Length: 141
Image (cartoon, rainbow, N blue to C red; front, side, top):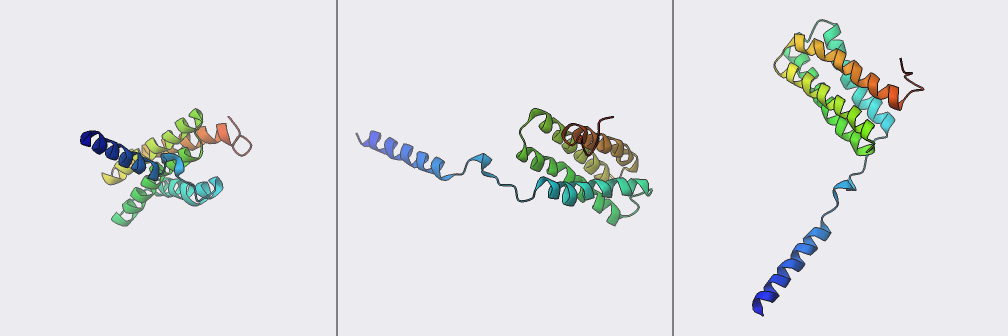
């Protein structure tokens, strides 16, 4: 009887812990989609493209900026997915994760050639998503 009581108490405690924890979907976005795009994603992508188009990065400060921007892009995809669970949206957001990760690795190893190759992938990532989800702003080709 004592064993059953102990087990019952343990089960109740476990259930209580489970009830107190918030569900994983309890995350609440702070920024609007427009703010996220204009204030986070666009500047990060622009930093990478500008660094490459200017023949750089040329010093540690510029490489650090590209690393930060690349990580911002990669992690921003998670913020995008948080807002929309449409399978096409998720696939497009994951393209951003991939390009951000590739840019980060290139910047981490200070590989300007690899970083240059990433800019085309970055452009394709943005274009693919915008053609599908912002056709009035970015018409399909």
